[in-house]
Length: 343
Image (cartoon, rainbow, N blue to C red):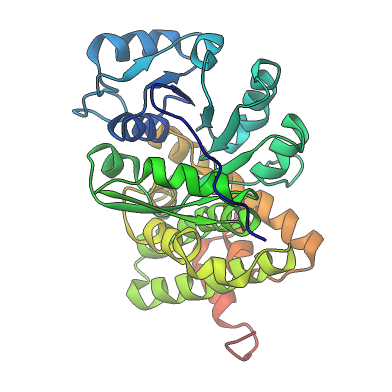
């Protein structure tokens, strides 16, 4: 039986957003516009002070003024005081550390959600698996994912995303609170599938940037997206996700967005590689986390352990970590044995 939506009283109850990068700031702004009091926390106190003074995140979302109900909070304990919902918005490489710091400060009724995408490098675990290890099985958790760019959410442009939680009622409650005339949230209980979609699409977007940067054209790009979706679904089903999840916002939607628009850091990373930059130089030039770089290595290990064939993701891995020239990688893919499309 699906869980009934829990009755929640959120009027006047602040939400803590942990992570003051572009996406954390955009979600904090949206929560505030939706009527919630928001406390935005980050590690860089100098930058937080500048944001508090300017009432804007000039580095990541220039020109987007903070709503009056959004407060900058440099102390983690202060951000959490009196909250019911905690939203963690940090790169996958920092998730375990932030959750570990957070865990002893959580009161029993507090819920934890995140907008982090990617596998943990050392373990190959997804965010919800890391959260269960750190926070325990009883904590109510959720993930926010889907085809969203921070700049457009910050600007209030129409957006749709997915909120997934094993507790369907919690996902529905968050979706109701986040939805507005310009923001539509859908719900899912397939947290495994939603997180796999968010992780795999980043590596494929690097491949799309490489392909376009080398001039392979629209035909190649759409083939990469279509077959990439097949790889994503194949891995997800092998790990226990539902196939239909990958035809939704957190699968196909997010994949198409990140493979086709230059707001995607992963796509831009691939374009820079195609222009001759080394991975290190491309990362430095972008200046923000590029999840696809780490994701390619993690997917290689996860797919091997699950005995799942993922030739496109393997191509991206070999280009990034084994110095395989991208043109040779594409030729190798095109010369693979003929097979049925459904395989």
